[in-house]
Image 1: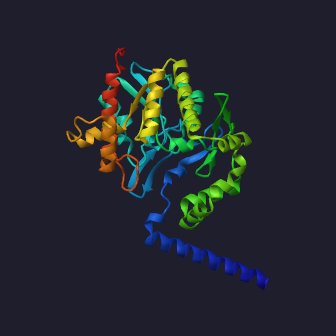
Image 2: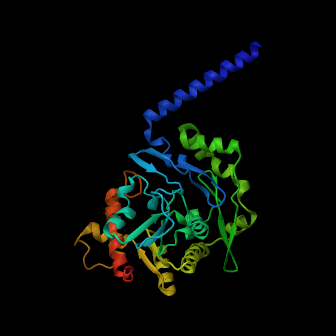
Image 3: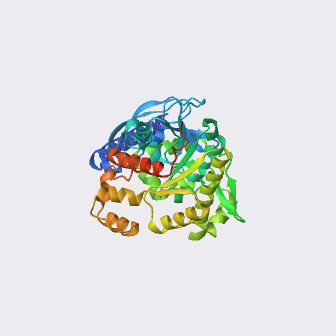
Length: 364
């Protein structure tokens, strides 16, 4: 009995000590605090890996400040969307945290600003933090069609290049694809559910400094979910080259376009600032395929520079913009996500582009 009491006392002392270390680190090294509190809104989803808990209304306390989040009954950061369409043209927006509006209130997002500029446009923002193009394709195929969109806009971000090569991320299993004889083959569907113990570790990893840092050092996420990676995917990655990786990205986008066309919607591809080589790859492929494509980097940089870059081509504009760190004025502190200024600029650029593409010419 005495031994048991000693063990319980030692355990209690150890927990108190760990708690004090956690509090001390949080006070002395705030940069080490968990930085993605929005993941507490996620739940297991057999189609997508994770999705939002419906009906949540909360405040997210992020490193740069606080912002409000309300999730509707459809799992979107939106008001409830009636399935029956009205006279407005409906645009379904797919993307990750840039589309979702990480770091800003809903009224500041570019999707809401577009609606204010174009009263005959209804934007259904289906963006979700952490999603790759593979998850967006699954969403469009299985859930997006119920909205009967006239337009489908995919916002592609640089981290999608990594997301689309993973069958598990952020401690969550997810769907993934491989290319076999130029065909897209889906894997990890339905997405396997994690054990209660793994879910607890995942929660601690995302909410505590100590375990979060230890998880990063030991790559616990990869160790925990190694068994959720199909053998076909491992073999695909072992033989993967950069051109083959880009081919996979493009095939996912083309399948999104084909699916959009199948439901009678116009497909629009927009990329946040990318590596210039990858942007040229997308631009060439989009031109060859006749897709509407807007890379945001050149117009964003021109908007920020005013007349300073007049007479330069897009490549020169982006190079100077990056070297002068102009895009930092559109981002959150120490975070690439757009601030309210960034969303306003993106909304203005997208709006002008939509007008130039005659998107509204058939609107009653």
